[in-house]
Length: 574
Image 1 (tube, rainbow, N blue to C red):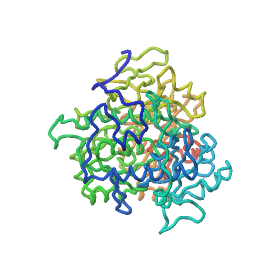
Image 2: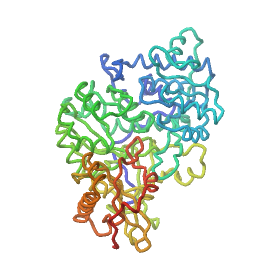
Image 3: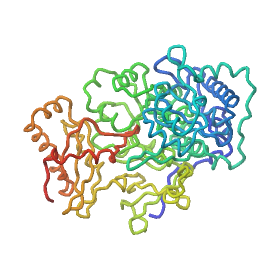
Image 4: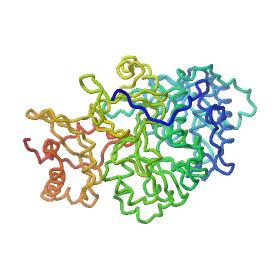
């Protein structure tokens, strides 16, 4: 097996358009742009009930661009940073910057001032769109890097006004009609391939976050690739049997600053003709209530939410029968949990997707030919995507052989912003070196683990995700994370951090004997079905929560300092 690619054939995406020209203006003429019904809004704000239609998105985008150009003269290559939970004007702020030729840097609203300083020093913002709840941290960070407060725009209103002394987004939009029109950035043929649209933080699971430079062409390409893969706008089956239909609704709780929420939820769903119901933050009960209230048809999940759907007793109170499509991505979902999720969502087409920030979110997803994706699989490659699996000795892996995944395609990002060394190490000759150990079988991609996170026990590899998926099937376990701890005899040993069911967690805290019984039960749960080198001989430690990034990936680097040798009572030589 030298190289893997999948069909159908991809019509070349345009390489002379910016993202808003493609998405909002319909300038993509290679194939018919999917049609949106006039009665179908692009966005619904869950908090206010505001519905925003395509023409309104276009108008608000142009108004923001007009005002931003007038007040700050934002132009080619200037960076505008967005720091906000999901907001109905998040997209228009991004697209306004793009129309001016600028770059949108998207950062999480929970970042501390120190973390913001790290990102500002990599990519210094010319202006900052910020939600009022994030303002204190932003002001602390801008004071360190020297960005004046008059370059901060409050994206939301508190009551009928914003904090004193700052420009307000609604105010800028209202004054735009009296301001001179801006000159829109027009790209030459091929220029979209190398013109940066987004600066997106990498997942940061194993170290300090890097900043991924994503071009306009990368975003446009992945939208077209996903649409081609799912045969959007094609009468391939009766309407009732199609995966994406006019008028469908997707629940938009995934953070828009993250690549999964920002590209797949926002850009792809709008392109495909769906409505995105935006919620600022994830709250599980509200999530369930919104599925019932809006009759949500499409869910885009990360594994922690899938676990809640399978395990939380409150799920039975809500009618989830409207859900027809569900994709789980950003981290592996075990075959067992997939089967449990099918019991909760019996009418659903269900499968996984696989991708990275460096691939603009998507490499593969479960195909139309499968109502339920191959269990344990990350899906099949999108059109226009090429892959190869490289073994440690540098040779190419055969079918079902494991190795490191390399990816090539229009969705592969430009590199790491202001980090030439990391770019040269990861983006090699047109290929992205993913750092993921995988194998292919019958066109399906199976992700074993991040290579840096594999545990080596006496030379044998242990994939934390495999053990975590199994631990979640234990009735006492709510969440789990596995790390390797050093051992003189074996090199490393697997150790588990466990979040228990609430009533058990309280009992364990009070009774050390009972805690030992629970540890023994969990240990045996693994011992009974896994090879000896995979047993949790590094110990089992109870914790209140597992640190994860917003996409659901476990932040193992934050777990290792928490290891408490006193509490890890189960230790054994292999």
